[in-house]
Image (cartoon, rainbow, N blue to C red; front, side, top):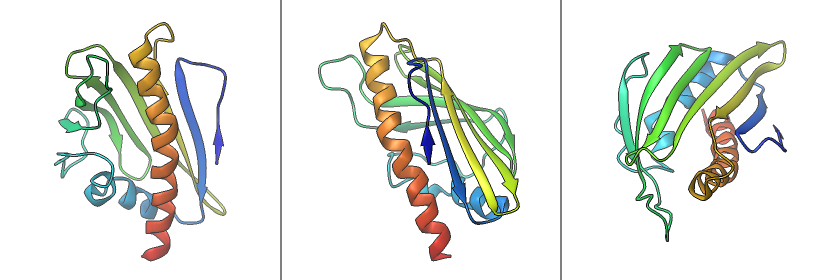
Length: 148
């Protein structure tokens, strides 16, 4: 897995799985997977335009209470999962894109989140949460693929 460093307005990861895209996709959109990290995520469908909400840990000493609203901005089965996440208070709004690229050895999953504001302490804390949390999600996807 590779991670982009230096640009504080984005978070990028690139992870390869030795499985076809449809298998990686089935794990990526599994409520079981996301239920391991976030609370109250009850989305059963992933479709462009649908909205969702969930809870994460609040940032102590900030106004962020852990409530996030989102909408899927573009969903293409086995290829692309793009969404916008916005904190309930509107202080953070991030666009995320998870792109699956098949190759002869399996599937490359590229994760790209944009919109972080380096001058905003809470946004940098949220970025750090992504930097720490998403590699765990990418590794867990790998574990779930091996279990199936």
